[in-house]
Image (tube, rainbow, N blue to C red; front, side, top):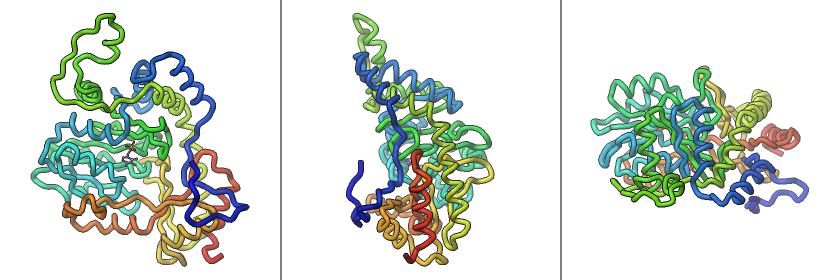
Length: 388
Ligand SMILES: *Cc1c(COP(=O)(O)O)cnc(C)c1O
């Protein structure tokens, strides 16, 4: 995994990465068992992972996919978003959030976010509303829960579908419950940059049985007969294709790993929150660095633990990244602003001042399950001594 940093770390210092998945013997063993079983494509383990994930998140249906991006694509299809529709999305997000509406021929309309959480609110969404708007994608950015209830009411009063991009947010809570269950449909990521990983992988979750069933079909070519049905029968029933589908399947190799990882999720969140607590105490004594914090209505899994570099600090964000790199510490620029990317130059966005400030001034600190106290202290010391 380790790549050579562009600024060489002193030979005596071991590199500290921004993220590292927590994987072990158990995941390896689970995959060995799948190989031995002879069924490696989507099958019984995927079904078991879906059931376990739905139970953990308190939703009726979970449909495993090849990624969160493909889950978002399916979410827009089952929600009935059509070509030509407008879909309100935060620009302050990974590019996939804006790409999903584009895949179905809809137009992303970029809206701003609140400075404290990096998430949209009724106020920011209202400014983007058009007559063509049919849906909203909210994001739990970096695991920070979005304040869903007021947005839910606003969407209902305007007849808009509410889709939650919960890519980062497995293990985050909203009013004491897992996030993602209050939207019409939610999408999750199991990329190694998130807490729970299957290498690549994703999930769609919904309480709408018809939508879940359609998502299941669309993910395997919209085939009228499922793979499981075809393989259990000696003479498979003839298949039919009522519409054009996709291959967005998860494999049983991934699902087996996901089952093990899901069992570790609560421990991952607890460890991350403990480490963030230490960062918080340290940041209180450093002028000009503001650490993202839980809102009063929920808790973050701190998938991304970002700090905002303010004018009171002697270095700007790029300066901090270079300063940390010299000490062998690989932090990351904060969340991007999609509306500033060449791919979306054709979309006219309104004023998004908070998005642009956050994208310019935030950076993500190293945070992972096995981050040692010594290594975390190295990060803290580096931030406390910007001139050395
Ligand atoms: C990571 C991420 C995605 C994409 O997830 P994949 O599983 O890599 O497709 C989408 N949205 C957000 C907010 C993300 O952070």
